[in-house]
Image (cartoon, rainbow, N blue to C red):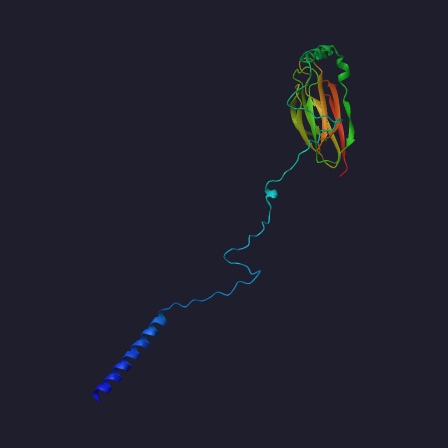
Length: 222
Protein backbone atom coordinates (compact mmCIF):
# COMPACT_ATOMS: atom_id res chain seq x y z
CA UNK A 1 0.00 0.00 0.00
CA UNK A 2 2.78 2.36 0.86
CA UNK A 3 4.56 1.59 -2.39
CA UNK A 4 1.40 2.36 -4.36
CA UNK A 5 1.02 5.80 -2.78
CA UNK A 6 4.68 6.58 -3.48
CA UNK A 7 4.32 5.57 -7.11
CA UNK A 8 1.26 7.79 -7.58
CA UNK A 9 3.08 10.75 -6.00
CA UNK A 10 6.10 10.36 -8.31
CA UNK A 11 3.84 10.16 -11.34
CA UNK A 12 2.05 13.37 -10.41
CA UNK A 13 5.30 15.22 -9.73
CA UNK A 14 6.74 14.18 -13.11
CA UNK A 15 3.59 15.37 -14.89
CA UNK A 16 3.66 18.78 -13.21
CA UNK A 17 7.35 19.37 -14.19
CA UNK A 18 6.66 18.43 -17.79
CA UNK A 19 3.72 20.85 -17.96
CA UNK A 20 5.77 23.72 -16.46
CA UNK A 21 8.61 23.21 -18.96
CA UNK A 22 6.20 23.34 -21.86
CA UNK A 23 4.67 26.59 -20.59
CA UNK A 24 8.12 28.18 -20.13
CA UNK A 25 9.22 27.17 -23.64
CA UNK A 26 6.03 28.54 -25.15
CA UNK A 27 6.37 31.82 -23.23
CA UNK A 28 9.99 32.27 -24.43
CA UNK A 29 9.03 32.08 -28.08
CA UNK A 30 8.84 35.60 -29.72
CA UNK A 31 5.54 36.71 -31.11
CA UNK A 32 5.83 37.69 -34.76
CA UNK A 33 3.40 40.34 -35.96
CA UNK A 34 2.73 40.55 -39.65
CA UNK A 35 2.31 44.06 -41.11
CA UNK A 36 -0.76 44.57 -43.25
CA UNK A 37 -0.07 44.80 -46.98
CA UNK A 38 0.47 48.40 -48.17
CA UNK A 39 -2.43 50.04 -49.87
CA UNK A 40 -2.07 51.22 -53.41
CA UNK A 41 -1.52 54.96 -53.97
CA UNK A 42 -0.89 55.51 -50.25
CA UNK A 43 1.83 58.12 -49.39
CA UNK A 44 5.05 56.90 -47.87
CA UNK A 45 6.50 58.68 -44.83
CA UNK A 46 9.93 57.13 -45.31
CA UNK A 47 10.22 58.00 -48.99
CA UNK A 48 8.26 61.25 -49.50
CA UNK A 49 7.40 62.22 -53.03
CA UNK A 50 9.59 65.12 -54.23
CA UNK A 51 7.73 68.42 -54.49
CA UNK A 52 7.96 70.60 -57.60
CA UNK A 53 9.96 73.80 -57.12
CA UNK A 54 7.91 77.00 -57.08
CA UNK A 55 10.54 78.90 -59.12
CA UNK A 56 12.19 77.04 -61.95
CA UNK A 57 15.88 77.27 -62.74
CA UNK A 58 15.07 79.43 -65.76
CA UNK A 59 13.93 82.15 -63.39
CA UNK A 60 17.39 82.44 -61.85
CA UNK A 61 19.27 81.95 -65.13
CA UNK A 62 17.17 83.75 -67.75
CA UNK A 63 18.31 83.54 -71.34
CA UNK A 64 17.81 87.08 -72.54
CA UNK A 65 18.77 88.12 -76.04
CA UNK A 66 19.74 91.72 -76.28
CA UNK A 67 19.25 93.65 -79.51
CA UNK A 68 21.10 96.83 -80.40
CA UNK A 69 18.39 99.51 -80.78
CA UNK A 70 20.68 101.48 -83.12
CA UNK A 71 21.17 98.64 -85.62
CA UNK A 72 18.89 100.34 -88.18
CA UNK A 73 20.78 101.06 -91.38
CA UNK A 74 19.18 104.48 -91.55
CA UNK A 75 20.40 105.27 -88.05
CA UNK A 76 24.01 104.08 -87.77
CA UNK A 77 25.30 103.96 -84.17
CA UNK A 78 27.85 106.39 -82.81
CA UNK A 79 31.07 104.91 -81.52
CA UNK A 80 31.86 107.10 -78.53
CA UNK A 81 35.26 105.46 -78.02
CA UNK A 82 36.58 106.42 -81.44
CA UNK A 83 36.45 109.51 -83.59
CA UNK A 84 36.03 109.39 -87.34
CA UNK A 85 36.90 106.07 -88.94
CA UNK A 86 38.56 105.71 -92.35
CA UNK A 87 39.45 102.58 -94.26
CA UNK A 88 42.63 104.28 -95.44
CA UNK A 89 44.55 106.03 -92.61
CA UNK A 90 45.84 108.57 -95.15
CA UNK A 91 42.31 109.79 -95.80
CA UNK A 92 42.11 110.95 -92.21
CA UNK A 93 44.75 113.60 -92.78
CA UNK A 94 43.57 114.38 -96.32
CA UNK A 95 40.12 115.10 -94.90
CA UNK A 96 41.62 117.62 -92.49
CA UNK A 97 43.63 119.34 -95.22
CA UNK A 98 40.52 119.76 -97.37
CA UNK A 99 38.68 121.55 -94.58
CA UNK A 100 38.55 125.29 -94.77
CA UNK A 101 40.56 126.75 -91.86
CA UNK A 102 38.33 128.28 -89.21
CA UNK A 103 40.33 131.51 -89.18
CA UNK A 104 39.49 132.08 -92.88
CA UNK A 105 35.73 132.07 -92.26
CA UNK A 106 33.74 135.27 -91.93
CA UNK A 107 33.28 135.83 -88.16
CA UNK A 108 30.21 138.04 -88.63
CA UNK A 109 28.03 135.16 -89.80
CA UNK A 110 28.63 133.31 -86.52
CA UNK A 111 27.14 136.02 -84.31
CA UNK A 112 23.55 134.96 -84.97
CA UNK A 113 21.72 132.30 -82.93
CA UNK A 114 21.15 129.11 -84.92
CA UNK A 115 17.91 127.10 -84.91
CA UNK A 116 18.75 123.40 -85.29
CA UNK A 117 15.17 122.12 -85.67
CA UNK A 118 12.27 120.65 -83.68
CA UNK A 119 10.57 117.28 -83.33
CA UNK A 120 8.11 115.41 -81.13
CA UNK A 121 9.25 112.76 -78.69
CA UNK A 122 7.37 111.15 -75.80
CA UNK A 123 10.33 109.39 -74.21
CA UNK A 124 11.60 110.01 -70.71
CA UNK A 125 14.88 111.49 -71.91
CA UNK A 126 17.08 112.13 -74.92
CA UNK A 127 20.74 111.27 -75.31
CA UNK A 128 22.83 114.07 -76.80
CA UNK A 129 26.21 113.39 -78.43
CA UNK A 130 28.50 116.32 -79.26
CA UNK A 131 31.99 116.72 -80.67
CA UNK A 132 34.15 119.26 -82.49
CA UNK A 133 33.61 118.64 -86.22
CA UNK A 134 36.73 120.66 -87.05
CA UNK A 135 40.21 120.31 -85.59
CA UNK A 136 39.81 120.32 -81.78
CA UNK A 137 41.05 123.66 -80.47
CA UNK A 138 39.52 123.97 -77.01
CA UNK A 139 35.91 124.89 -77.85
CA UNK A 140 33.65 124.98 -74.76
CA UNK A 141 29.85 124.92 -74.59
CA UNK A 142 27.12 125.05 -71.95
CA UNK A 143 23.92 122.99 -72.24
CA UNK A 144 20.62 124.51 -71.07
CA UNK A 145 17.09 123.08 -70.80
CA UNK A 146 14.30 125.68 -70.74
CA UNK A 147 16.82 128.33 -69.68
CA UNK A 148 18.09 126.18 -66.79
CA UNK A 149 21.64 124.89 -66.75
CA UNK A 150 22.07 121.15 -67.34
CA UNK A 151 25.83 120.99 -67.90
CA UNK A 152 27.99 124.03 -67.15
CA UNK A 153 31.00 123.19 -69.32
CA UNK A 154 31.64 120.63 -72.05
CA UNK A 155 35.00 120.54 -73.81
CA UNK A 156 34.44 119.60 -77.46
CA UNK A 157 36.91 117.03 -78.72
CA UNK A 158 37.27 114.80 -81.75
CA UNK A 159 35.43 111.98 -80.00
CA UNK A 160 31.75 112.21 -79.18
CA UNK A 161 30.69 112.96 -75.62
CA UNK A 162 27.26 111.77 -74.46
CA UNK A 163 24.92 113.70 -72.15
CA UNK A 164 21.48 112.52 -70.99
CA UNK A 165 18.76 115.19 -70.70
CA UNK A 166 15.43 114.40 -68.97
CA UNK A 167 12.36 115.70 -70.79
CA UNK A 168 9.39 117.51 -69.24
CA UNK A 169 5.82 117.53 -70.60
CA UNK A 170 5.33 120.20 -73.23
CA UNK A 171 8.15 122.22 -74.79
CA UNK A 172 11.77 121.32 -74.12
CA UNK A 173 14.11 124.01 -75.41
CA UNK A 174 17.68 122.73 -75.45
CA UNK A 175 20.30 125.44 -75.95
CA UNK A 176 23.98 124.92 -76.71
CA UNK A 177 25.75 128.12 -75.69
CA UNK A 178 29.25 128.84 -77.04
CA UNK A 179 31.47 129.80 -74.10
CA UNK A 180 34.45 130.59 -76.33
CA UNK A 181 35.79 130.19 -79.86
CA UNK A 182 38.79 128.03 -79.12
CA UNK A 183 42.23 128.90 -80.47
CA UNK A 184 41.19 129.43 -84.09
CA UNK A 185 37.47 130.33 -83.78
CA UNK A 186 34.57 129.97 -84.28
CA UNK A 187 33.00 127.48 -81.87
CA UNK A 188 32.37 124.45 -84.10
CA UNK A 189 30.41 121.35 -83.15
CA UNK A 190 28.44 118.41 -84.46
CA UNK A 191 25.44 117.29 -82.42
CA UNK A 192 23.31 114.16 -82.65
CA UNK A 193 20.18 113.47 -80.61
CA UNK A 194 18.86 109.98 -79.76
CA UNK A 195 15.59 109.12 -78.04
CA UNK A 196 15.37 106.81 -75.02
CA UNK A 197 15.12 103.81 -77.38
CA UNK A 198 18.42 104.66 -79.06
CA UNK A 199 16.89 105.94 -82.32
CA UNK A 200 18.54 108.89 -84.02
CA UNK A 201 16.00 111.74 -84.11
CA UNK A 202 18.16 114.77 -84.87
CA UNK A 203 21.59 115.67 -86.27
CA UNK A 204 23.16 119.03 -87.10
CA UNK A 205 26.26 121.23 -86.92
CA UNK A 206 26.95 124.76 -85.78
CA UNK A 207 29.56 127.48 -86.09
CA UNK A 208 29.10 130.00 -83.28
CA UNK A 209 30.80 133.08 -81.94
CA UNK A 210 31.28 133.43 -78.20
CA UNK A 211 27.97 133.92 -76.36
CA UNK A 212 25.84 132.77 -79.31
CA UNK A 213 23.67 129.67 -79.02
CA UNK A 214 22.22 126.86 -81.13
CA UNK A 215 18.76 125.55 -80.20
CA UNK A 216 16.75 122.34 -80.52
CA UNK A 217 13.07 122.20 -79.51
CA UNK A 218 11.56 118.88 -78.44
CA UNK A 219 7.81 118.60 -77.82
CA UNK A 220 6.72 115.95 -75.33
CA UNK A 221 2.96 115.37 -75.48
CA UNK A 222 2.55 113.23 -72.35
